[in-house]
Image (cartoon, rainbow, N blue to C red):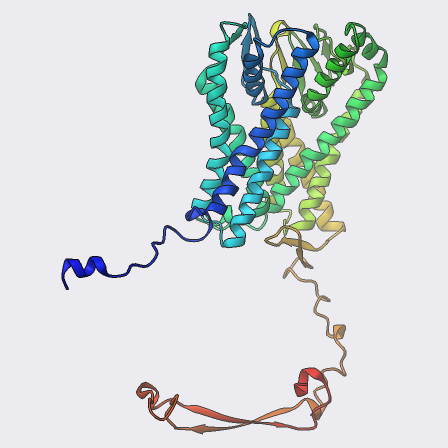
Amino acid sequence: MTDEDVRKMPRGPVSVGGGGFGSLTPERARVLFMVAARASGITLLIIFALVFGTLLAAGSGLSGASGAISASWLAVHQVPLTIGRTTIGLWPLLPTGLILWLVARDCAKAADHCAAEGDCTPVDLAWIAGAAVGGPLLVTAVCLAVADDASAVVALQPPHTLVAFAWVIALHLLAAVAGVGARHWRDFAELLPIPLPQWLVPGVRAGMRAVWRLLLVAAALTVLSFLLHWSRIGDTYHTAGNIAGALGLTLVSLAYLPNALVDAVSVLLGGEVHIGAGSLSLFGIEGAPVPAVPLMAAVPSGPVAAWWLVLLIAPAAVGVLGGLDCGRTTGDRPTAPWATLTSAGVAALLLTLLGGIAGGELGTFGWIGPNVWIAAILAFVWFALAGYIGMLAARRFAPAPAVEYDYDDTEYDVRYENADYGYADDYYADDEYEDDYYDDDDPGHVVEVDGELLDEPFALDEESPRESDENSDIVDAEVVEGDLPDHPGVDGR
């Protein structure tokens, strides 16, 4: 065969990859584009509306609109900025939480689309993570360039490029991992060289629930503090001037509300929150100037009351509930409380991340935020010790069924355990089934098989017998039914 004949031979389609996003079809490209662009596009539209609405309401020109939009995008991603001589690193968590929620939601949908076509491979997960990070990085690069140009018009110093990129990559990558891992954590587990222990996933979920419960207690405490200092809230609105100013103060307070909840969690754990040169804890208060916004009216001015120590019951109760969850959903024993320790570690890690994001410099007021490391250590101690007590109570007084989570995280396979073999003695009790249904003395349930061993060659037809099966054994079986009852599962009807 000549080279000319080879070139003329018909060629089949070339395969680029397997299932998932390994082969980038138009449909998969559309899904990845939505991951990269939807959250960023929605965020930019909201920023555009707020910036232009504020400038038009104030009656100022639009010359600084580009710089304000760029600064807003960077502020949403917690990038420290210097405006004039004022450095601001304390940005509200509410906008950041919303954009990260959108990213996590889009990544989860992309993973669902990938799983519908086949198993999610590491290449597929890398495509999703790259799309979640690549789109915001492109917008950040444009905003940094615009901020550099706008520095000649407005008093905005562009931040360090590596710092801005690091914040964007870390936040969006964290959102992508959380979004995909919430639904397809088993795909991540398959990438590990060793199998996951049985207690790991329930322990992680117990730690996340513990943080959520503590945030709810902090929200209730913040509302109570607002009610106790209602008169001070009115004083902050007196400086607003008009309705637009009052509305702006309200929006700023709502945007910073998640920051205040993280600070309240640190106080509940027994730690402290720094407000410039002052501090706040359950054991003492050092006064310092605070920003004149309604949210800061909830900060108590002192002195410390003795009944404040009762609030330490909150982390203890949350830890006990976490231990109860671990005792009910895992096989933890008093000698091996691995799920409880995992829950405490996850809670401490989440509070460390939240505390690091919730704090920062705020101009002349100084650094405002919780003492992250003390809060993390206290969280681990509270949830480990109190969680151990809760786990002992669950194993001793309420031996509830252990739960194994299915792949879709919505159904549960319940197995009743005892201390010895992992199953209750009465789970497979003899009286669970009716004795007369499977009666050994009933001849109607006897099926006899009359078999005869034949030594015949196997052939599909007479013309093409299979020589390899000449010595194969064929069983010619005859089923003899004796007095079978009229039942669909027995007589085949």
